Image (tube, rainbow, N blue to C red):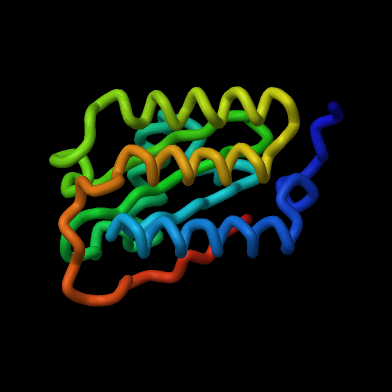
Length: 152
């Protein structure tokens, strides 16, 4: 399958809305705060950063660390580099197995290699739900952040 030129072609508005709804459902079921950030390119100032460093920076930019329970999870996709990184905050890491993110990454690799971008992110969010099910204490307050998927 052809690789669309831009992330907005691989993830049209309707797909982003479906992903956002899936994220909201998983957040409600698990007590987590999940964000998906899809970027066409790195900024010039980010050229020397590893994927982990870039994910940590994006995590901060999206203010996911401001979640009181520290249950933030970021799925960062660098579309043109065909790379991604799953980053979970310290509250999540206290409750899940370290292999959790490898499982999510394998799911993304499989779907993305087939050109099934929306399905890959949807299944990745579903895998996150599977790993978090009944593991995070339910927060007393409603979700602090939007489930909106960002594309830039």
